[in-house]
Image 1 (cartoon, protein in one colour):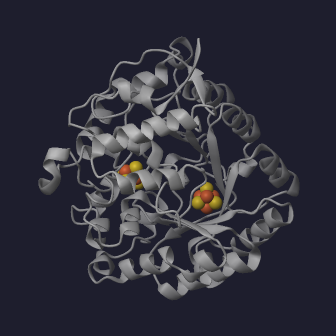
Image 2 (cartoon, rainbow, N blue to C red):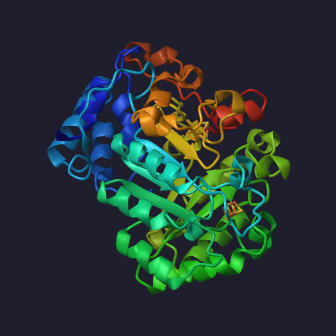
Length: 430
Ligand code: SF4
Ligand code: SF4
């Protein structure tokens, strides 16, 4: 039987260890709902933001959001999945709603930030990729990133992108632009995949982190604009571009070549970023440099002037509520293993590719069992003890001041916490 997945359905599967846990909110939040001056690919942004502002009581707010989504049908109309009962999973959704599908490690580039190399340069065998993708799509995934590597060269790319989009899944991919063909861009446009072009700054900065890709990235941005499908820039925030002037230059590039905005991701400790020492020094968090760079980014004049959109990692996005207490910044914390999951070209399933190794399940999809157990991936999500470990971490802490409302602190990024002196330095931004 087919049934609309509604936020309310998800709620039923979430155990309430903590009173009024803001479960649904996480799901919604990932669609970049935030102050309406920031990015919102979905038309619900303004309404939800209003609900947030009008309702200080968590439960009331959650119910209003659920009702609103039900009435509007914005998500449920788009996403239909098979209705089947899922056992509850402690401290997580009973199935992931966000998927990072990274089937291939092949790429012509040698970016210093690359984590694909960490996952080996393998590509999943086609039948394994198809089966794991199909199992994932059976779950109530709302958002999918097809990536992990340069997928413009991956032969099954459009097969998967089309299937995801036909299933109502918001699908995105980041490309370097190297080797991009007009036909590929047109096909992505026609399908409606959200494309981002990786570019870490002006040429002299970008080409340190992504050797020789600047020209191709600019040409890609121009090409997408030319075919009527303008894209956003996707940048990794490292020690090299942690500079307000570089941020200004990035907006200038976006304006000049017709990108519609910029996504900025804090560099996280995995693969090349570690080996090549690209991480932002802890000192720059402490002395406020990172904060001023992020502030410049989030409040750049071009956002208003040229109607650009910006996005930033969730753990620092609380800055949108400038200097708010973490709990006031709407209970955002790590999604890894709680509602998001990755399937990687090395066969491993994880909660987040940046998590330290001890948080990555050992189960591998390169096994005949994948084909005999149709819930193979779901079982990993539900039962693997390693996921239990990451969920323990991300559970959050109750805010002492708002205890009776069950409001949680932001717990922060486990990957960053493991790297920086035992705390997620984003917490220093408040
Ligand atoms: S383009 Fe992407 S996959 Fe290729 S080397 Fe750069 S970061 Fe890695
Ligand atoms: S470990 Fe960090 S990067 Fe990964 S999901 Fe959690 S917050 Fe995000």
